[in-house]
Amino acid sequence: MTESEKMKLGLWYDANYDQELSEEREKAEDLYFTFNHTAPKEKALREDILKKLLPKMGERVTILSPFYTDYGYNCNIGSDCFINHNAYLMDCAPITLGSHCFIGPNCGMYTAVHATIAEERNLGLEKALPITVGDNVWMGGDVTILPGVTIGGNTIIGAGSVVTKDIPSNVVAAGNPCRVLRPITEADRIAKK
Image 1 (cartoon, rainbow, N blue to C red):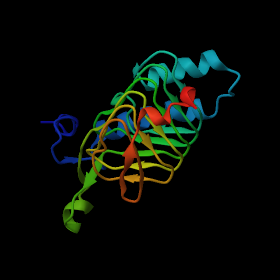
Image 2: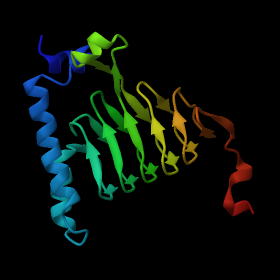
Image 3: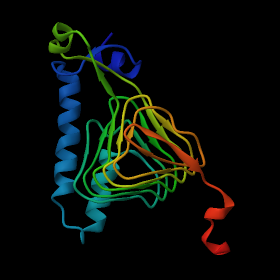
C-alpha cells in the first residue's frame, strides 16, 4: 500500500519522506505561489489557478491571497464561500466547507495528527482526520480548527477560537477551547428589531 493510499484511509503514513506525497505538495505549492503573486485585478487568471489548485471548489467562491494548502484536491469548498486573507487548509484528509461559509483572516484548518512517541514522529509518521464545516457558517479572524472536528450549519465561531471538539448547528461558539455560548434564535433576526 502506498503512503498516499494510507493517508486517504486515515492510517499512519510517511508524510515527510515519501516522494509521491512530496511531489503532490510541491505541485500545490507552485499553484498557490502563483495565485498569491497574481494581481487581484487579474480575476480570470486567479480563477483559473484556483480551479487547478482546488478542483472541488463550488461556484462564486472568493479566496483572498495569500492562501495556502497542502494538496488542494482534498478541499471541498461549497458555492458562495468567502475565505479571507492568510487561510491555511492543511488538507491531508478532506476539509469540507458547506455553501455560504464566511471564513475570517488567518484561519487555520489542520487535519494532521503526529505520532506521540518521538522516534515515530522523527520518522515523519502522521495520520489525518477530516474537518467538516456545515452550510452558512461564519468564522471570525484567527480561528484554528483541529483534526477531526465537525462544525454544524448556521453557526458562528468567534474570533480567536481554537476549535478542538465538534460544535453543533445553530449556535454561537467561541473561546480557547471553543465552546457553545448560546443558541441562535429568532431574537437575533435583524428584520425584527
